[in-house]
Amino acid sequence: MSDAPAGARQPQEFESALSGSDKSVAQFDRHDRSPLEKIQHFLHSSPAAVPLIVLIASIVVFAVVIGGKFFSAFTLTLILQQVSIVGIVGAAQTLVIMTAGIDLSVGAIMVLSSVVMGQFVFRYGFPAPIAILCGFGVGAACGFLNGVLVAKMKLPPFIVTLGTWQIVLATNFLYSANETIRSQDIEAQAPLLQFFGTNLKIGGAVFTYGVIMMILLVAVLWYILNHTAWGRHVYAVGDDPEAADLSGVNVSRMLISVYVISGLICALAGWVLIGRLGSVSPTSGQFANIESITAVVIGGISLFGGRGSILGMLFGALIVGVFSLGLRLIGTDPQWTYLLIGVLIIGAVAIDQWIRKVAG
Image 1 (spheres, rainbow, N blue to C red):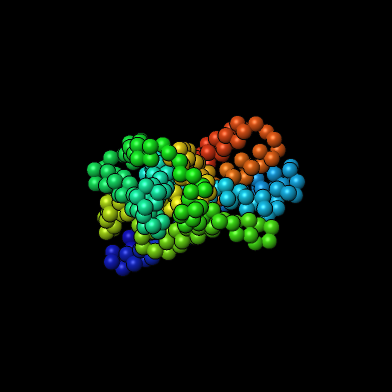
Image 2: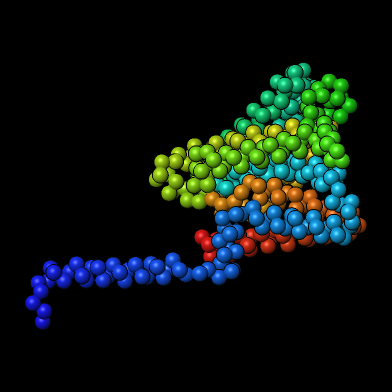
């Protein structure tokens, strides 16, 4: 037995244990990820990468199959025009889904807002700018109703927005008496309502102000979500609302603000819709809610909330536009478009689950 006191041995034992701990940490740090793990972690940190790759690949494939005309500036900007409404409504849907919710009423809010804009001009004689503001007010009110029911009454977002979708849709038909305001009348009395349908030619490309608005909206929301406290709170609430609440985030207020902003964006989509159609139709935009969810899912935004990029939503909308136009130019049955989009939706959800399981 050693004559050294117990206290004299402790520093050596502690040093030895610490050395062993350092070795284990060093071994952990030196662990090399497999190529598959590297891909998974890259996709987890860059959720817009998958839809961007699919978008580029689909453009290249159709350019090879159809020919160089598909890759022309006119064709590509035509795709942008076709997805402008879905892209704007998809931006509203993105904010809600990032909080682990869903909004089935976005399309109905969009159409009701456009109907209010038209009716306030032609039924009540309001100046077009005031009528447009009233349309935005209706969109915000609908969003506020959804937000209060979800945040304050703790009702499931799916059920709440399923109900408000029916209410808003019925209100739209009852208020408008199912009457369409013709393009000629709008052009003569309130051309401001058609502003977003105005063409802007740059070389061979033909943009509309609606397309430019969609791009600007996505860019602004990308900045807000990634570089502001409000944006970080949106991700935090979607990832873990209880943890967000403990960290000082007012979850109820955040949810209400998200749904109100979503309603305002839907009203903006209603204004763009008038420019796109040239008229105010209460029957337009019937599938905007499904199309927006499709763009969000294909865009790699997690339906479980807390993860995704609004750029991915834009790429998802463009993928649908590329497939729709490409298959139409080839001359295939339109049902093939729905079939391929369905495959993309299931594939996107499967990839999201795979990323969450390994890299989460």
